[in-house]
Length: 284
Image (cartoon, rainbow, N blue to C red; front, side, top):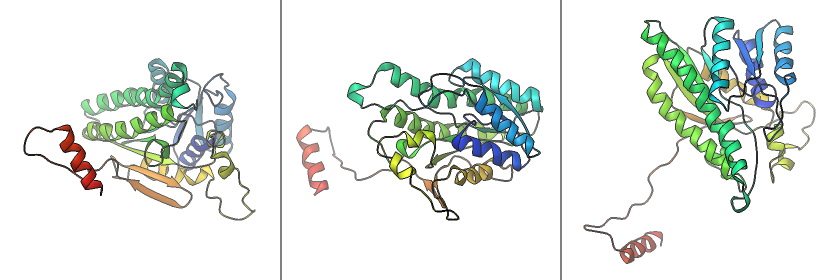
């Protein structure tokens, strides 16, 4: 089950998983970059491509930003193929704005699709896997979430909503990995950098991703570079869980997250001036 699989990185995930023998539910609402509108075409086109290549796939246009939409998507996977083994949360939108001018709608829309969309699909899939495990079945399932450089190691001005959602996804991945391991479920996340319609629309980044790559040369920003890591993390032979990986071109880097830095201490209650003196002294 791959969300946001009608275009870009999600499409590459769906195609690779199908080539590897998975029956794929291709989910895509078919909206614009900002999440408005809907079109069944993108999801169906990917399904047609998979089927034409000899694979198995069905389309789904549920809105994963709603609990009900995510439930319908999980139910369809189980009804169509008799079970669910892989969940790739990938759907996303952009509504960039600087904080001082950001509207409530811009904030809510991005948080809903990215963070709530991940959580909704994860919740319904987790409930299914927990039920199977409690019934005595052996579960071997994998979740791959999609974080971002913007929410981890490379904050981007104008993306407070997007960065916050992606940072939340990275944190949720670690919590979910801890919770679901007992049921036979592994949970990891990727933070991809690739050329997509969203990155091309990101201020300050469009020119970088739009550069021409000479024919026959390796394209470091091709979205197809991201899918092999997802294929590896999805495999039931993989034991990795609770990890976040940055991936771009030919490089994969494990992200370690927040770590303790310098420490200042006192033997009694803190005084503001003491904090200032110690911080300045430590800085120097």
